[in-house]
Length: 306
Length: 306
Image 1 (cartoon, chains in turn brown, purple):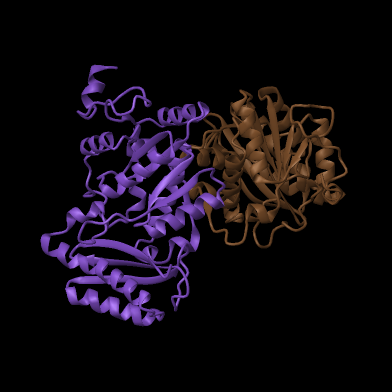
Image 2: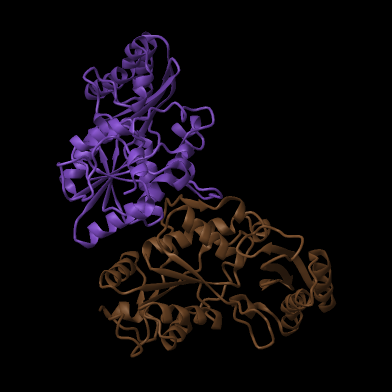
C-alpha cells in the first residue's frame, strides 16, 4: 500500500483478512465494490452475514446490535455513514458527532469484522436523483417534524442493502418508527434481507442512549430524564390496570412538565409493530415520544401492555 | 401437483427443469420465492442469468431482447406483468392486451428458460406503500403527459431486480426514456445489475413494434407511419448536413401534419444517453416523440448524428 494512502487511514490497526477475528481491528472498506465483494464472497463460502447500519458516534446501543449480529452471523459488517439526505435543512448534519478512529477502536474491541465507511461523494455522486418513499408511514409522528427524514432513511438503507447484501440487518428499537419504515420498504420492494430489531439500551439512570446525548448540558440531561421516567410511569399505570390512553397521556405530560424546559413534540400510543394510533391499551402498545430539551431533540419509546 | 392447480395453468406444456432447454416450453413461475431461488441457484452454480422484463402481449421486439439475452447469458428469465402503477387513472390498464398462453408459446419457440408471471396481489399486497422516484428524469417528456408513469416503472423494475437478481437486464431502445430512468435508478440505488439496451424493432413499413399497435384501425395505422417517416426524414436532413434543430423539427412536424389526424405531444432532441435538450446536432442526438393517432398513444425515437 502506498505510504500516503496509509497516512490518510485512521491510526487504528485494521486487518486485510475479515476472518482473522480479534487480532487487529476490523477491516476498513470505503469503496462500494469492495464491500459488495466481501459480502458476496462470504455468502458464496456459506457464511451468514450480519449488517449493522450506523451513523457512527457509536455507543453501547450500537455495540449491542453488533453483539447480537455476532451471535447470529458468521461475518459482521458495520456501516458508518452520516447520511445527509435524512437531515432537514435546519437540522444538525454539520455538527453531528463524528469520530471514526474512536468508532473503529470500539468496533475492534466488539469483534466487528468489516467496517464500511463511504464518502458522501461515493454515495451521492453528482447527478444523483433517486429516492425511496414509504408514503404515509414516513409522514406521521417523526415525519410531521422531519418531513424528508424517512425518505432519506429508506433511500440510504436500500442503498446499503444493495452494496452489502447481507442475510440480516440489525436496528435498534429506540428508533421505533425507523424500524417500521425499514420493514415496510424491505417487504414492499422484495429486498431479500431479514430485519432484526434489538432492545433500546439505556444509561443507568434511564436515559435512552443516543449519539445526540452529547449535545445535552448537565442541566438539560437532568431534565431529559423526565422522558424515560414518563414512559416508566405509563408502564406502571398499565400494569395497575389503567387502559385509557387519555388518562395515561395526561399523567405522562404532567411528569414531563414538572421537569421544566422540556417541550413535547408528540406523545403517541400505537399498536405495537404499526404506527396506528389506539385510544385504549387492549394489547401490545408502543408509546413513542419526541421532545426538545434546550436545543436538543430527543426521542424515546416503550412497549407496554404485553 | 394438485390437479386443480394444474387446471388453472395455461394449456402450454411447461418444464420443471430450467436447463432442459427447448424440449418443452419455458418453466412458468408465479411466486416471488420460486423465481428468486431459481435465479440464485443458477448463479451459485456459476451460470449467468439474463432478465427480460415485459408486460406480455409479446412481439418481435420482446423476442429480440430474449434472443440477445440468450446469446449473452446461460439462463434467460422473461417476466410478464402488466404493472398497474405505471398506468395513469385514465390510461389503458384494463384494456391492455393480455394473452399469457400465446406469450408462453412464443417464448417456448424463442428458447426462454423461465417465465415469471406474478399476480397483482403478490406484487402489491394490501398495505403496500413504497415507491421509487427518479426525480426530474421522470417529469419531462413522457412524464409531462404521464406524471406517475416512471415512478411506477422504477418501482416495479426495482422489485423485479430484487426478486430475480440477474447479471443483466434487457430493455428496448423504443422506450428510450425508460432506459434512461432505469439506468439512473440502478446507478443511484447501487443495484448490482448490468442494463443492456437493444435496438428498436420495426414492422417492414417502419412502424415501431408496440403491444399497443393492435389498438390501431387500418386507417390509423397508415397515418401512424408518418411518425417513423418523420424520424427518417430527420436522419436524412442530418446526414445532408443540417444541424439546426428548429429546422429539422419544423420539417418533421410538416411530415406528420400531412398525414392528418396525428397529434404530436412532444418532439424532443436530446443528447444521446440523456434527457438534456439540444438546439444543434453537434454529436449523437436522440430524437424522441409521442403522438396520439385516433385514441391510440404511440412513441418512437431515433438516434442521429452518430
